[in-house]
Length: 213
Image (cartoon, rainbow, N blue to C red):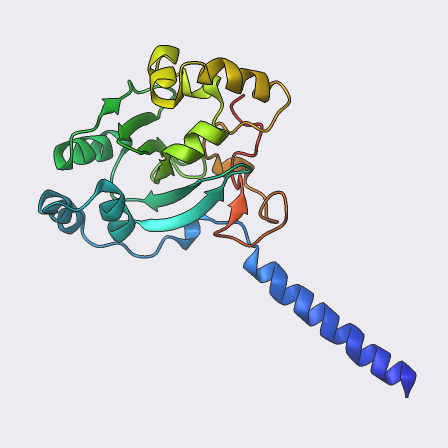
């Protein structure tokens, strides 16, 4: 009788473990659902009437993943097949003028709206897919590598945004690892990163803490 009960318990444990694993599947661009017509989405942006750029992105593009920093803040990563990097940057600019906009570097570009950093880049998995990473200022300040951001903006500008000694302070921190260098789907892990939490609330899912140092 004891052996029979032990066997049932063991099976139950395996079933629960399997269910938990299914929630930790890596986000994949294959999950992108059928999207509306490009003209429909463009029209929604053009006729947004005061909606924030964050809300428009969230309402019109597929949320692929969420990155939670080791310190604080978060970044949402969206994916679309409708637009190229250049087309999205132009769409965002026409919808709401950004505070800052970088040059295009390494295939990607960053625009800044008040407390939001938006990085637009092609997916490493499929060049026909464009990724949109929307990170709040707290996440950027507390988690990003200054050398990564310096690819797009001067240290003088970054220090003015985050504090006079931010770049040097972050560099000192990054010497010990733990700095984020942007979302990288090719390096995404199935266990959700450190802590093994589920998809949609992962720790540095994608690039990993040391990416872009």
